[in-house]
Length: 377
Ligand SMILES: Cc1cc2nc3c(=O)[nH]c(=O)nc-3n(C[C@H](O)[C@H](O)[C@H](O)COP(=O)(O)OP(=O)(O)OC[C@H]3O[C@@H](n4cnc5c(N)ncnc54)[C@H](O)[C@@H]3O)c2cc1C
Image: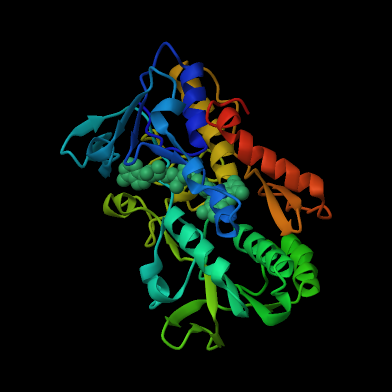
């Protein structure tokens, strides 16, 4: 039995099933039973995406003979790798032979005083809809965008938002009356050096002022000031920050994560460190892997875990390891984008922004449901 929880790994659950059809039974535990295509939230604040169209029933995406438990029956509250058991919120205990953890991450606005009252973001359906209203009513002033702290989901997303915001303000005739400031916690505007080198001139060209070494410590919603641990205070009229992120409580409660709930995971086998002989794997945002918390990484990782379990069940050699592969687009505004393709050993070399990459991202956003969850790519 494997436990995977939604998103791109859905395709890999379907794949695992295809590979080991006759000898396994698979159960998915998912607290919500809903699959959300989170990349679409980026477009909601600009009125370009209806968030209700970003959700599908998990049941409809899984092959029919894969069991799905949701609600309290699917909400896992404790995992015991030594006993190979997990407990759900309805009080039931379930035994397993293999367990795949794909619990993702959660927004943790409570980590920054004043975040909930003073900052906006697009890291949930509700927040992206609220931001859409604020942007529609915005008439000029100072907008601060960026990232509160690392790690966070989809490293390009806050930059994409900033480029799209700049273009949208220009189209609305508000660029001249708006200052844009971008804050980032480390010494450059993106975690990877080659992408930083690529985006820094673009930000400068668009008149975006960059503040590095800015780890958000407090937000004063009354006076509209965001302050960093490093001692910088920035006034704002609108503040749009990727919120702090944490791993899930069940991971912390089960003693499987570090202090913030990220699961120590072998970079190549994706087995949970310290439980190498316990048939315990982790994929996606829940891990502490040194790659983007992205659907793309979760997708490639899911393939490796599906192949590993299928090989073990069928008593054949394991053919695949994970080498840190990630592939994603980065919108640069004005209907253009670039493409990031990398792994542990090879940093991305972003090509010049082009309309073609933007159209490819739009095509993926449209055909995601037909391609990824069914395991077609
Ligand atoms: C604005 C935005 C833009 C993005 N853009 C991109 C992009 O362009 N490209 C890209 O590759 N990625 C992008 N991402 C990131 C991508 O959406 C995530 O990295 C991806 O969804 C991670 O998949 P996951 O399966 O690890 O976690 P999730 O998709 O978060 O799924 C976790 C699942 O676990 C379930 N769960 C949690 N705890 C429990 C529990 N105790 N019991 C049972 N179930 C539980 C949850 O209900 C949820 O269904 C973006 C994200 C955001 C927010």
